Length: 434
Image (tube, rainbow, N blue to C red):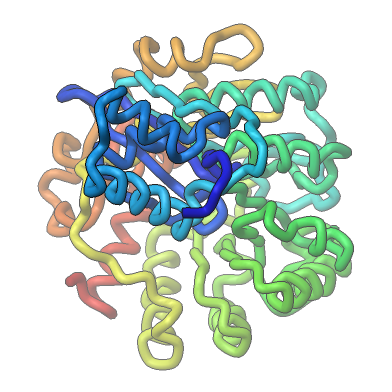
């Protein structure tokens, strides 16, 4: 057995989460995004891997003063070895206090969050739901952002997406990322890509899990018009090349509008040629600057969805995200994820940024709000199984609905989001549910 003081690795999220029947343990590597299943004895050993106990001291603590059998000693040593091999713990040469295990007592433990670290943006996109451009007059300070990340971590968040505006315009972006990594959280960055340089890419290594990049067309006349700045496409494509060469995972969002509805296949061909398989095609939302004549109708979205699914089925099957029977009966809104806006306003879901708000990080305790807010309880009661339209749908077994999408489209709290219904219909006709 390797000598030293076993301690939890800095990127391991370890939490004891309260459940109606007791508690469950979550062990997650925030760098690789892999979960690790811990047995009850393994969890007890992890509790003692504080960085101040040697393995013999851990064995003595577990067995008391009584003589330990060789079998017991070997069992504990094998657990420590397994934890080392799976990069859950490491060995310090000298005693040094490590992180304590998180204890999460929320009825609805958080898992993920999105935070707008600034509303400032270098583009002026026609469809921007956020009306981004200038900083919000009451933007969170860097210290307030760090405090919000700490509060999210206490609530169970182990995955955070930083967005804006354009997050790379924040002067302390790398300090914020580093703080989240130490929480520990995996960090995604939602960016237009135009500001990414080779030096930045090197700084992103071991810090960013995945980049979410907006790409609406590979035709500069369309993309640049859509994004409100000449040369935007060229810079975004350069960033994609840099990130791809560095091995970063990327996910792309194509904002579907009247401007690009006839050129989606060109973007898909670009994805295929560059082996970029993660993307979503999302209709421009009816909010912010999206409330214009560039939005597509339900019928137009249906036709585009059929066209892109048909192309992918025939030419680019890796680009189709397979739909299977749902594992849960409800979407994550008000249950597992939340959004914090650049001014500190809290929303129940990253997709529900236009209301209704549930508070502000400046004047409320996040955990108390999440546990006791009446509006959140109301939202949690909305499910596809109870929605008057959803519960009669042929795709109920595969779809949890989208409360945020429904609200942005109809300003009504319900599950049925017509654009999602249309996508399910197109998917079933072209690919088929399994």
